[in-house]
Image 1: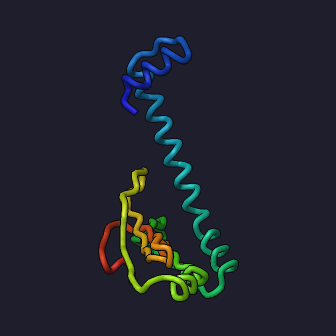
Image 2: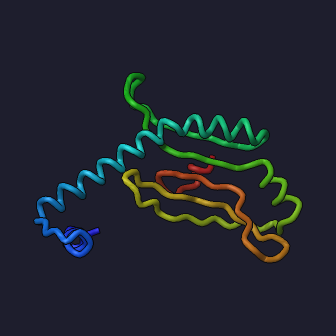
Length: 142
């Protein structure tokens, strides 16, 4: 949201005139708060992976992090999910055609969401694997 839009919304909804400096500070505070939430959620990612593996035996769930030195903080690299139930469903009820698609993630930590889809008997898309990666490359699916 642009600063002029923030200023306009505050004026129309709260009937308060604010200058651009206050709008800039408020926008920066919100961005910092959102980035903090991402960092907190990153620490919970390991629990999410463990829970997925516990509740979905036979599934392929991989997470890769990068650490520059043994004592440096970890940085998220990629996350891959392929549930066993979706594997069976694709093998039993879908055509042997695969499609790969991706989209950009627009958040403080950039990346791409890649998905693998098939076609079911009704000619609908059947999602069965997805990954979050730094970029679109075949190496990321290994």
